[in-house]
Every structure is written in C-alpha cells, then in structure tokens.
Image (cartoon, rainbow, N blue to C red; front, side, top):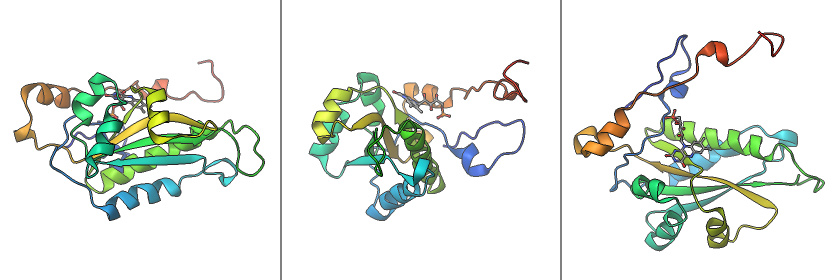
Length: 195
Ligand SMILES: Cc1cc2nc3c(=O)[nH]c(=O)nc-3n(C[C@H](O)[C@H](O)[C@H](O)COP(=O)(O)O)c2cc1C
C-alpha cells in the first residue's frame, strides 16, 4: 500500500512516499544488510560541529526475547500495531558535545535529522518506518542500560506494510485515513514573523 503526500508543488518522490503506517506484515523479517543501510543513512546526517550525538539501540524480531522486552516499553496503543514491525529502534542523543563536554543544545535537532534519514532510507528500500513518542522512558533506559548523559527521544518501528488484502477492518480504516498538513502559507513567512 502506498499513501503519497498530495502536494501543491512537486517535491522529491522519496519525501512524498514516506508515511507512518500502522499495519505491518508480521511475518516479514529484515536482513542485516538492509538494517545496516538504515544506520548508514543516519550516519550521514548533518550535525552541529559534526558531533553526531545520536545513538540507536536495535531490537530485532529475530531475537524474540529482546524484541518483546522493547515492545513492552511502548504504550498499549503503540504495542497494538508495533508488534507486527520487524525491528524496533530506540533513539538516544548525547546531551553534551563530544569535543568539550559542554551542553549541546542541538542534540535533539541533529538526532531528529538522523532519524528522518532512517525513515527516508526505509522508504527508499520499499520498507516503512513509524516513529513513536508514546513509550515509558524509564523502562527503556533500564532495558537498554542507557547512560545518564544520553536523552532518550523516541522509538522507530520499521517493517513492510501489510498487503491491503490481508488487513482487517480496523487496520484498513486506520491506514486509509487522509494525511493532513497545515497549508503551505502557514509553514513560512517572508522576512518577518508578522504577516
Ligand atoms: C516524535 C514523534 C512521535 C510520534 N509518536 C507517535 C506515537 O506514539 N504513536 C503513533 O502512532 N504515531 C506517532 N508518531 C507518528 C505521527 O503521528 C505521524 O508522523 C504524523 O501523524 C504524520 O503522519 P505521516 O508520518 O504518515 O506523514 C510520532 C511521530 C513523531 C515524529
């Protein structure tokens, strides 16, 4: 199933094709080379001072115990669909610069950019990524033994979208819902905040 952005002006096809599905194929497993490509894409994101503050923890369905422990960190609503993804990625960011230990006020900004690279790389390989803020941070911190200097930002579920013919009614309704965005005029102003 595809759900391309309906745009007023033409944008790059890859950006238009990315979306956040909730119906994944539960039997689909991702091979290691593809997983490496996701993190390679993150690796090449820009960052302040080239600091690369991101750190990702991978939970692969092929390791059922680890995957279900990660799944258990998610809100019930997210578990409901993320259980069918092939991998879960915990997204963390170093709060301090590597070169001098001073606070890095761009750690979230840079890690968000790297994570969008993961989402776009997934789309480019005919996979889908769905980011999540709905999870128990403390549980994830303890599970993956994340050090205090790292902030835990999100989870990303990656997998293959379930064929529409195999979706149940509630999956179908969720997946065909219209994608909404603010109008373009609200996205940017020229020269000043005031219109
Ligand atoms: C930081 C962040 C947190 C999100 N948290 C959740 C979440 O907990 N559960 C969920 O189903 N979707 C979550 N989403 C997905 C958004 O709802 C989705 O990206 C948005 O509705 C736009 O849809 P699209 O990605 O298909 O364009 C999150 C997205 C981001 C970037």
